[in-house]
Image (cartoon, rainbow, N blue to C red; front, side, top):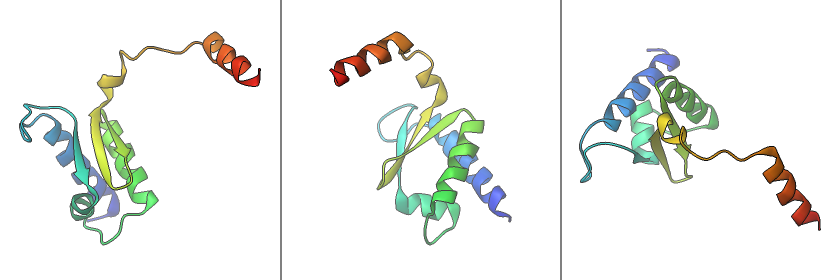
Length: 100
């Protein structure tokens, strides 16, 4: 199995878990320990390239992988759609307040 297939397989598993009931919730966001991520990817160590590949593979499936250093969070990309947007003017005002 090539590396890409490992990532695609792992991304499919993680994407499918999003809709399954576990941990007292019917579905939704969840976290995965580094140990389980290594096991899922069949690696002894995880490198930045591994996490980048997983992030891309999950994003293609509609999910976001967040690296929290000691664990990973999987969220639906749709969860971010309704977030409020910051405007240029708001950023400019904040920068001006900082300067002075």
